[in-house]
Length: 310
Image (cartoon, rainbow, N blue to C red; front, side, top):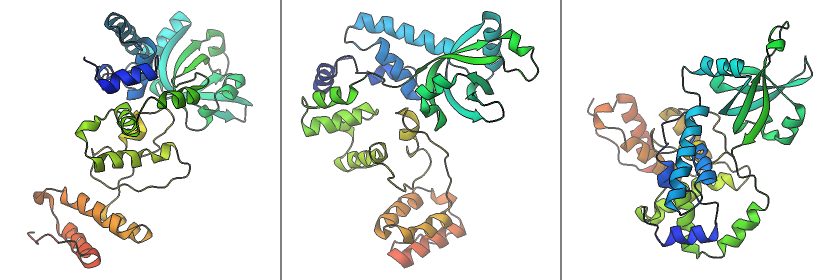
């Protein structure tokens, strides 16, 4: 792939930190982990512009993704490997909790359906994010046959953990220094490309909307309501691009609920968003109730209602 001016500028300003998104696309959807997990591994093994080194790094990334991610139906296979080999390495979302009855911490590994995995208190203290939603990490999971024979024994234990995140000290200073090489417009385009969007294919308005979506990453307690049909990227940004965000749940709002929350926020903005939601429904899917909601919008904000064809 030929590198354009922005790619070359980024590679010079952030040497060793750049991940080629076209390489990350090769693993998207193939393994049961978020996109940024593959990007993290690519950044570790393919942070270069040398095509030969990139090819070797991709083989390493593909091998680790294939051997360390747990596909549906492979849970017992990984547990068996841990028992037969003594330990196994995997990539998983890890969370911990304090078990007051035993005065110890227990880890949860959802891909293996394990919720009572032993973990040292020192390891939890070093990675407190495990107590607040957890994070993806490269985990070494051991199996102790002696403990398995004990009454209520917990044979599985975490012996080593390597968070999938940027852990190098001075990262903010390095970013601030690299930022000096970009103009404001180049920096905007660089940020958009870093989350997988090609800025040249987005209008200035669409670019601003993408930046608005990213405000919660840099501003605490920022409340935002985004309404739209399924598959328009409302959850994608928070689920796929960063280990520092955790998608708690996806709430499906009915049109009645959307209308009820509108008086609490900017009416004009909500009117535009509801117009977008409603007009995306095919005419064949219109029902009497949806037409009534649309007519209610017309009465409040003057939106042209649908003709009744039911």
